[in-house]
Length: 119
Image (cartoon, rainbow, N blue to C red; front, side, top):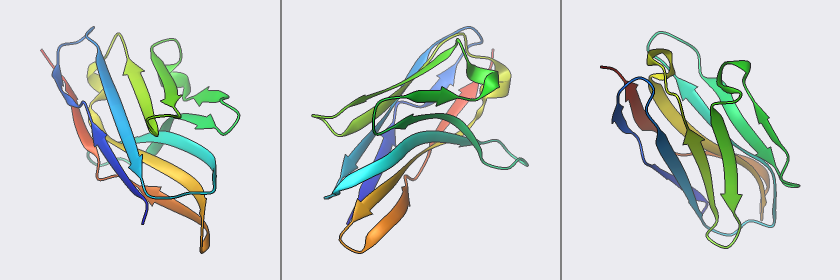
């Protein structure tokens, strides 16, 4: 069973930084993409940043030049470095992976971690 566990959220002042981590457990044969999504109160979940199996990243326009996604294949962990945080970045952040497992391609989600940007 694949599980994703996020960590690193919290309360930070505007202009501050946070680093989120998403640790994967369970066996996968391959993956298509791993990504970070966020959902603010009253809004739909949106893609923040993704990274493909070849390491190519992509970002939402709202976070370009501020956020960086990376992964550590040894630790089975994907990170989201968030700099110059703004109040509008406040949301629950979720990690997701589209992976090939014994039963076929599946999408998995973590439980989410709260990020609050406020003075």
